[in-house]
Image 1 (cartoon, rainbow, N blue to C red):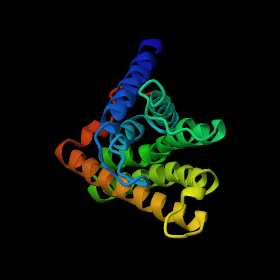
Image 2 (image 1 turned 90 degrees about the vertical axis):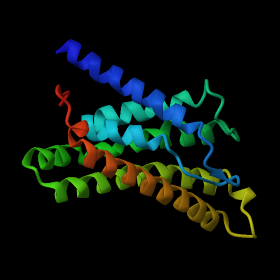
Image 3 (image 1 turned 180 degrees about the vertical axis):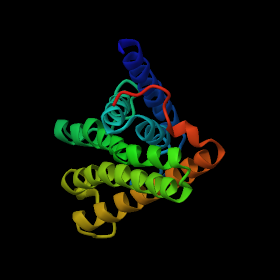
Length: 190
C-alpha cells in the first residue's frame, strides 16, 4: 500500500511540475486576461486520482510559482489567495473522478464526456472565484475604463476562467477519445 501511495504522490508532483512548465507558455493578453494551460495536467490528474490527490497536486502547482518567480505581489494576503489558495481549488476537478471512472468502466461515453466537462468547469470556477476575489479586493484600483472593481474583476477573471475551462475541456475530450484509460488508474488511493 505504501509503495502505491508513494507512486500516486510522485505522479501528482510530476504533473504539478508539468503544469508549471505549461504556465510559461505566454498566453496573456494585456495585464488581466490569460489562458492557463497548466490547468490541463492538473485536471487529468484530479480526474484520475480524485479530489484529495487533485487538491494536493494543484497546491504544489500554486507553490511552484514562488521559486519560478511568477508571483505578482501586492500584499501577503493577496499572494496567499492567488497562489496557494486559488490554485489548490483547481484540484476540485477531481469531484467528478468517481462518476467518470464508473462511466468509462461501463462504456458510457456520453456520461464520461459530461463528467469531464463538469469536472473541468468545477475546478476552473473554483480557482477563478479566488482570482475574482483577489482582483476585486486587491487589484480593483487598477480597473480599466472606469469600471467598478467588482465588475472589472468579474469580467476579466470570468473570461480568463471560461477560456481556461474551454481549452482544458477540449484537450481532455481529445485525450479521452484517444485513450479513455488515461483517466483510470491501475492502483487507487481511494
